[in-house]
Length: 146
Image 1: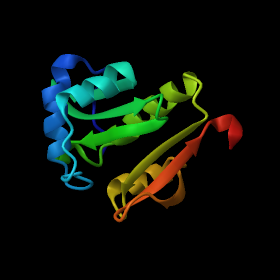
Image 2: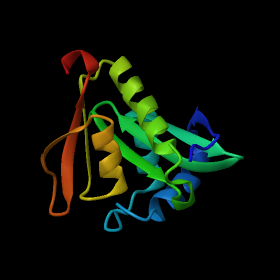
Image 3: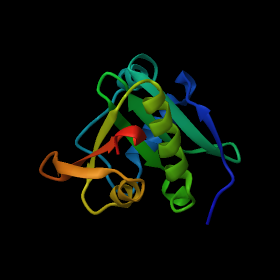
């Protein structure tokens, strides 16, 4: 079921909400990895950009990408907004922005067998190897390189 939502760039005031969303997802929780507000600021405003999807005034999810690392730093949705096309739209926005900045290969890692992994594969991301004991690494090449 598609949801009606708006995308916008995230701002500093969103950070507490983004931290809450990231800490409360069903899969790929990164519970062993505490991300500070300062790290959000670095990823969102220094190294890259972040977009949020809002549904009826509620931030349903977000996606952040970093240029120096050439990676997707995060894609997270509130559980009640899963399966509505929001993650796909956020990823499309993020990928297009990163490619427009001159990035030719974007990377990410994600837990195996998750909804996120299925989304990335549907979007054309390719498996490139094991990232850690529990995560796999993926890449997406600029369309002109595919």
